[in-house]
Length: 101
Image 1 (tube, rainbow, N blue to C red):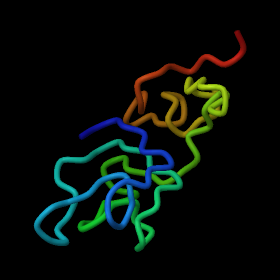
Image 2 (image 1 turned 135 degrees about the horizontal axis):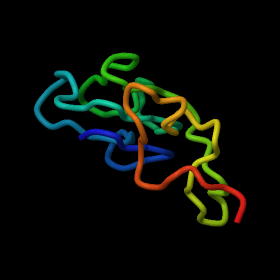
Image 3 (image 1 turned 180 degrees about the vertical axis):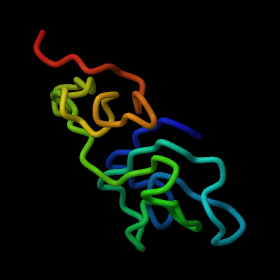
Image 4 (image 1 turned 45 degrees about the vertical axis):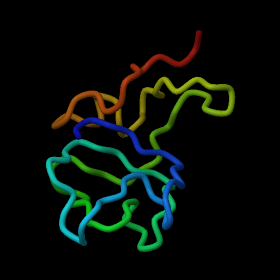
């Protein structure tokens, strides 16, 4: 799972963006992911495993969407998920930098 934005997730018994089954091992094969305000009890944004934050491009930061309250999930130019700020990973997430119109 690469180049995803996990934002305000509360799924599962303990919450979090990702639930790992079968133990507390590391989040396998995850690079260039952005986590923000997920509800896992340990603050790691996942339930049942760990995420190597600040490794492989995984970060915890506000994605700076254009206008999420109105459904605009494009990125602001200074978003940490934008290619200009995420030089190692390029674009993180599905939508481009394009606020304004």
